[in-house]
Amino acid sequence: MTLRLHNTLTRRVEPFVPLQSGRVSLYTCGPTVYNYAHIGNFRTFLFEDLLRRWLEASGYDVLHIMNLTDVDDRTIAAARDKGVPLRAHVDPFARAFEEDRDWLRIKPATEQPRATEYIGSMIELIQGLLDRGVAYHGEDGSVYFAIARFPAYGRLSQLDRRELRAGASERVSADEYSKEDARDFVLWKAARPEDEAVGAAWDAPFGRGRPGWHIECSAMALELIRRRLGTDVLDIHAGGVDLIFPHHEDEIAQSCAFTGREDFARVWLHGEFLKIGGTKMSKRYGNVTTARDLREDGVDPGAVRLLMFQVHYRKQLDLTDEALASAREGSRRLGEFQNRLLAATGSADGASLLEAAERLDREVAEALDDDLNAPRAVAAMFTFASAGNAALDSGEAAGPRALASWRRAEDVLAITSAVQSVKVGTSVDAQMGAGELQESPPTGADEATHRTWAIGWAVRRKEAKAARNFAEADRIRGLLKAAGWEVRDNRDGSIEVVRSRP
Ligand SMILES: [Zn+2]
Figure (spheres, rainbow, N blue to C red):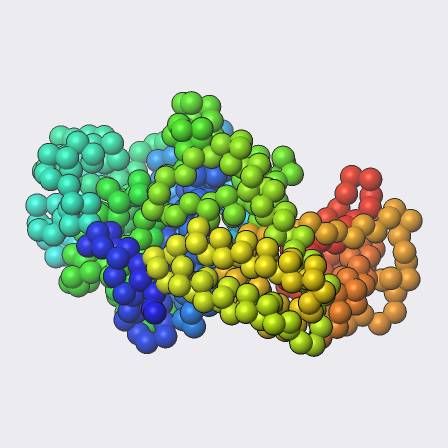
């Protein structure tokens, strides 16, 4: 069986075949860093992380591009409200996004372009569209895309003319009279004094201004796949369903009109909404939940991932207190089993564990190949944990195969809570960090030896912090993280090392 994905372009589940054998280009629309990303945004990023991880586990070399929108109406408005330059407003939110992303175990994209660093590519693209006659200067000094000159417009969203007009009015430049057609969208907005005030205006042959939101993604995606892969068609483009229209429709129009290709991306994937207690998450309803809210409540990132993956990405997910509580409990049970499995690992697998491991491999692969059916893959991990617990109860040994199968599944889903922690007291066991310590974790050693190694480094990190050598402290945190350990600093001055990955 091979990977099959639901393509929004055709509204069908189709076998996935990349343009270049063994390589996949994946573009995912990133966050607008005017504020903290909320948990609904992260549902989309988590579904994309699952897609990326499963492609990699299937043997593909993935070029994953995720942009940061650091200039648009919202970022400019927020900077102006605060009275600071654009950069000063967005930088802390860009850092916060990366922290939240890392906390949720989302793999950083291979390329993370920021819109303001690709203004040159955007200008080139817009100039190309003007040269090809599909863009024009409006009376207000802005540059617009002429939808009437791009016959394929509407192919992705499959909306009729009337619906297109109604929907487009929300996100196009406000001055309707400067455009030839009410549906036309802005590519370049003429600079206003309020843009200049926050440093959000650039010179271009077609006038000083700033890019429209849609052009940003087209320019960054095209620039990077041309440079990295020598192509101008993406294999996969993904995002939330709310981006289908107009954002992705407009990305297709700009990109295809520029490249002359039929497709901008061959497969379009869209993740459904997350609701809170049945209501759309919105500032208006005061129910916006961020990743840091969950983190402050002591929720393990494995539990958040489990919660998201228990519902298929094309179905709406309702986040309720009960659903979260049950995900926390489930993720903790998986963590306990994982620790048990690690502690029991010997040289050979018992018969029933071997059989359960084979079944786990098969079921996870079948589920994820079937349009990323994460709920079924998750169920397979629970089934394995139950069978594994029963086998260990009956005195069976867990061997390399059981552990390898578990690791393969957990590497893709990462839904297990870190439950077993080792606390190192305030009167630190100094000798644990003293003496010879290998940079890489001990190979083939038992779990107790691994733990001793991790504690040793955690102690060294504490010493580095005490000496205000933060670079070294960060380096050690990274070293432990790479080996599957998380180090936590407690308020009482003690430190803990927690298993985050088998
Ligand atoms: Zn985009």
